[in-house]
Image (cartoon, rainbow, N blue to C red; front, side, top):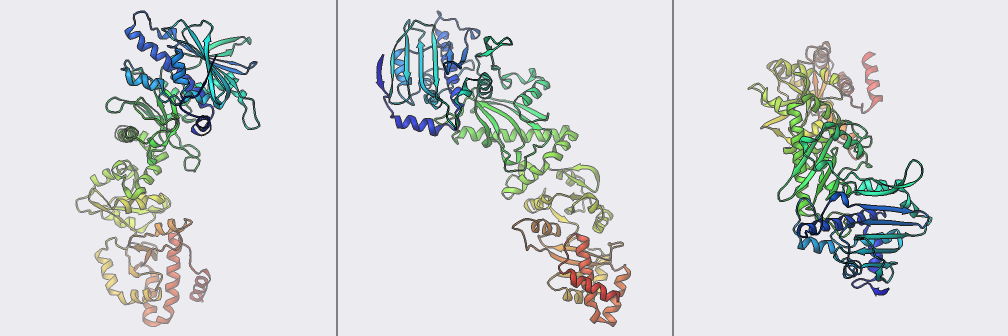
Length: 611
């Protein structure tokens, strides 16, 4: 056996690669299987020009054989094999890529491509093995050669016994430590799980040695080989899509909707996307990880490729497979390149189109989806200063005063009266609460439809959108909500009273005015400006939102008996008016669900009026 030193790199580079490049040890099996698949692909390319070779995919396979007695793991392929020179070049030079060189000089066809690109994947096996032996015979040679290394300073290479065409890699596993149990890579179930996770769609059978029902060892095919996403969507049933969703553990539910995408062009990829039926239990927690499974030529590269989904579509599950992506040296972390960005943009548009189609053609199903994930779309509309409005503003739904079903902004604007200049809305913590608003009756009398905002985020969306189809948003509980002639007359008649009350409540309200639509309520609060009463409550409930105050306006019902008392007191006993003003203000706070600022003073004012 000839002794050689590693040609291009030192032991330090090897140590760095083993301990730093790969984030988990199980990756080694993915790399060795990918290399075996590459070798078989090369046999295919040779068969295109060599009549002596009969390429039959059924005749080629990859075998995985664990041996607990010798503590070895064998990976064997029936690919093209390596000559002595290729063993030295490909395995003796760290980071030299035989696959990349082959790819650069060979025209791929028929959907076959080379997975390996960098030549370092083989050395990931040293994460779990302290010695590796590679036995290989090239298709053009009758000689078999053996390459062996303990990963330290170099390797040996020499003749081996006559063997079949192909390559056999034997890993002598490291001794177990307190931190790592290397024996797990000798357990058939563990190996099967790794193969299914990373290499399930390698196009050749991966046959793993397992025990049958009687305890005898036998080789069993453990990979699916034909990916669902490469099939014609017209030939795939809904049941198959559902089974794939559940087999990949995308969720414990059933998918509500799916999209099968196959794109060819400047960037080619296939994808299957799912909209779940139910929300994951940790969806709004920091533990939740968004992202799609990312494959390159059927090999899983990343379980959660968050780069492929915008946050507002983070509920989408599924996978993407492409042969056009650039990978880094470990084939583990994606480089941020143009191809990836193009795929992400395309997927975003596909999801948007899927939701728009549901909204148009399957409204009941879309309403079910929106009930589950609508809040996420609203947050996406609000975040980043509304920069995603074109993607999301036509996907959000609201309940309204004109319908028992949810409506879109487009539907609202379409049925607006010609005289209506604003999109009106009302806020409250429930539909029942909004229905009790006296201002709602005013809007209905005028023939205006009102959107019901029952989630905290709803009103914040209006501040970001500002307008929809050139219609601005206006709250019906805002002081800017238009007055009728009767209210205008009442305000003029009692302007001195209202001015006096405003002075007594200085710092609490900016104005006092009449509202003839309060029905049985003697008093109500509205707000002026950008901060509404609901926004005040929401912001003050946040850890860093304390101290936010809306510009409040106190509205009095001129038809209520209490108003006549105020008029009389203002004329005859103006010095007693302050107690009335404080009681009415605090009553309005209670009606609005806001805390009373000084409960003791309020109780004393009530007692003095009763006395």
